[in-house]
Length: 260
Image (cartoon, rainbow, N blue to C red):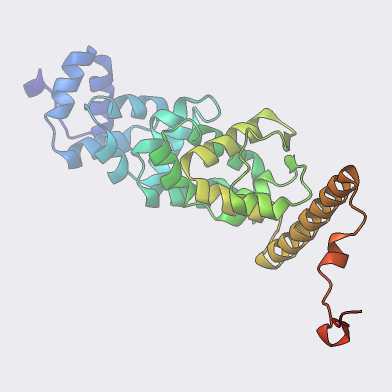
């Protein structure tokens, strides 16, 4: 069968390969050099048929990364939002992914939050290593813009909780307004806790000065609570002198230590 096939017209070659039994098509396709495989793939205009050609090799990562960003993006676009795009996304190079983000998450110079939301959902289905790799290629400000207003953290010392790492997507202090934002934030936290912390700072527009202010306030609050506990203990023990009075500086010069 291999001898009967011609490669003069890649589009015709594509149709012939896709009409064969799968095992036979795989054998023929794998017998071509990489540049010829790419030529046939690129000549196949139907994205779904183009995707089938990639699966004719055991690992399509190399072919995906050698293909044009636009060709691969057309394939991914057919299954975005279904979860199936996450099968091919890990095959992308980091540069390819970044190029795709430049194309898909901007519309008329404005951030397309719906598109970004769909892509983040697909990314969240990838394993942690790939997820972390791709998330770092999206500007942290863009991620924050998409998630801002979709969840709240009910805490008097918000920045302090974030900085100390005592909060995560399962914390009772976090209230989500939709399940997808919870799913995305959980994926970010699982993949990269440092990125999760940076993202929360961006979402709530916090800075180090605010953290310092909260730290001082928390210390003051802790001191007040401690003073209240001491006062209650003293009353229970019948102590009338306050701790403040006990710690007052005594002027030894004014003490009359002579025997009377």
